Amino acid sequence: MMNQTIRLASAAGLGLASVLISMTSPSLTNLTAEDMARFSNGERVEVTAYRPNRLLSGGLGVIGLGMLGWWLYREMTDGDGTAPVVIPTQAEPTQGQVIKAPAGVPAPKRYVDVSAVLANQMRPTLITGNPRIGKGIVVANGIRQVKSRLDCPVWLIQPKYHPKEHAYWEPCDRIKGFMLEGHIGDAEYLEQLGKELSEFIFEWRKQAARPTLLVIDELSMLKSVMPKWYKDCFIPQLKVEMSSGETDDRALWAVTQSSLAGDIDISRGERSTFDLLAIENPDSNEHMESLCASYQGVPKIEDDLIYQQSLSPKQAVFYHSVYGEWLPMLAYKVPQGAEGAEGAGRRSGRSGRNQSVSDSANLLTTPSTPSVLPDWLDLPTLLSVSKAIDSGVSDYKIIEDILGLKGRKFEEGKERLTNIKAIIEENS
Image (tube, rainbow, N blue to C red; front, top):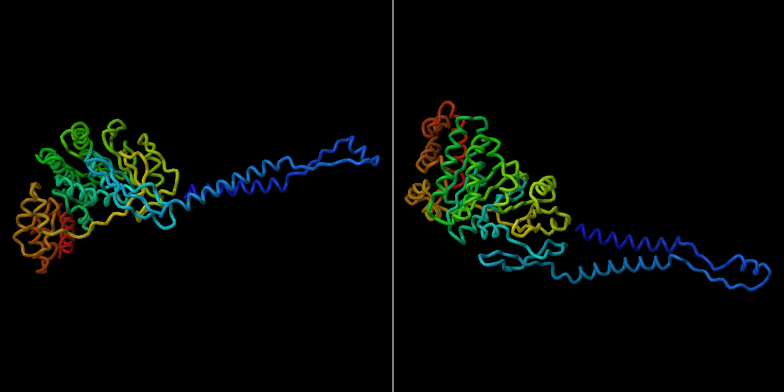
């Protein structure tokens, strides 16, 4: 859109300049002083008038008309407003279906399925973007493509395991889900959580199945709320993945809101071992400015047309280091609903702690059993809480007697009960 404006403004400016020059340029003659003297004596003198800037005026006018004509020709012959969708495969990028650009916007050279890029690469990848810009949907669709293509184990650490987003993560084989923001300053809880997170990563690394994928969301939140664990435990494990993960067919996708590599304690040299996926939209200029300053080689977006070409509701665009350029985003389907107990049984064959959940689920007659439960909740507890709620047992009794959380743990119990109620409501 910006280029179109520049072209029209340039053509109009040149045309206006040519008109002004032709109107204001003075007319000159070839008369000399001798001619004037001869004329005063009654002699006939031939006079020739001319405008010295007429050639310049005409030249500018021709250039302006040429630019306008070329632009109109390009617009008329620019095809039907569609562009190919490039879907990367294991062999090489191939053209898939053709998709139409937004109405009134010239089509880009291509649309690239970035979720397929993630799934195809299966490399350590740093994914960054502002909140609510579409990172979760891109990653969720990437996970689905990984499961579809490779059927490899996918494990998830989700510090913002909100019930509204549970459907995003259904295909994952193991989920360490919790609401970290509810435990800021709770040293006892955070210390125990740090141990569980480290154990979770160790277990993922030791599993026999290959390839395997670990997705860690909200790196910035983890660093802010759990700085000691992040520095002493997570960063060393992250560096292990940098050096040996790809060799051992392990892929780590780390998701963060921060646009600065230093904010998550990854130096520029260490960052080079990761692919980079950045997602921006017209409202995230500051994020993109700091991103380009932090990651060498990432260009700034100079033409606003790319935002107009995006099919994303947020007008999002992405940069992936495999392509090395900004590209308009496709519109991805928001994951909806649970897949049911049968899907949970299939997915849990390699899932360790979730295995008992799937075995119990197969004994139930209801098709509404959640396919994946957070690590702190097992199916018997879920059923007990559901039965207590139906019987009218008070929240206080459920938290203390069924969840076993008393005293200092009571507030944690309230949060867990809220999550359990949301799971029951989601699957009722």
